[in-house]
Image (tube, rainbow, N blue to C red; front, side):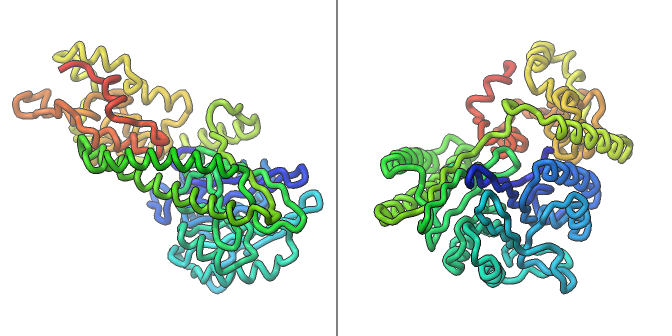
Length: 455
């Protein structure tokens, strides 16, 4: 469902079997949520939990985006579906609401799963204790497992500290830091860190082969492969740094700064992996090969999940219908009001995907989705435009003229007084083309010519 932010990873091919886990924030994207948003988001969370139950998931470490829906509510919903939630350092009203860790047996191999949150996280009515102490307790309880996996809601730096303090950890699956890595990142004590990015757009897959007497993991990439990736990242970093120093505009500078941060982090990870490989040439180790599988339309819909989705969408439609009063006193008129004086630009706009934006939601039956509607309706990102799907009239359906050029009511009644934005800046576009929803594909200089319609 739109707006979900989750990191899901499969640890696979353990003696022909697999262990499936989710590192959290599957239900919501942050630790705060408005009362108006809560009912719909809980229904979406139920849909995700139903899908987890169908997959036979082995462990879910809830993040703050899941816990904000209500700890008791989440526990009851997960228990009904027999989904194991793991949070070793969470206490609510003096009691642990969830298991801290569990053991999973697959084909003669024993895997330990433990979930922890950062002490920096705030959960209403609960206390988050020291994750290191909780991981140490889990490691003692699971001392005889073949593989110990920690699912964390911590920063990248905190993961390094956890691996350094608890030497028994083999893998850390990070469900909070904004990581999106095909290859694992090296951590202290021969541990590795995995992540599959945010918003549920990719599934992390890790193929593991355990070697008798092995210590830590060797990367599936050779030293030559990593050196080649390092040289490519260095080149891209250099280009991004040049764009920071002499950008054509502020938007380009911000994009370049994000790229500098990304490639700097990627280079650090590659250098750590190279160091690890060079130091361990003659040391036996387990092997791990990771990849990110895009969850796109190339993957066929699962019939049972498709049925669950249809039910959820119908219930959300009923839930949101008539939930708010109609929109009044709005400065937005809709694109048809522009056609009389701007016939050619209007005709060109009608041929663009912007004009069909609302129709795409209708096809997907997502017009009542609170996470989707605002980028598919005219004026919905403006404080005086529709603030709820039920307020989107036929005139405002689609990304219209006024989304780029500003509200048109005053201009229509008095053109000389109500001046419009003739040349919309990039900042207008990136409200929706934010680099997350479009997975970074949006480039202003490339996309703008596709929608420009004359002077």
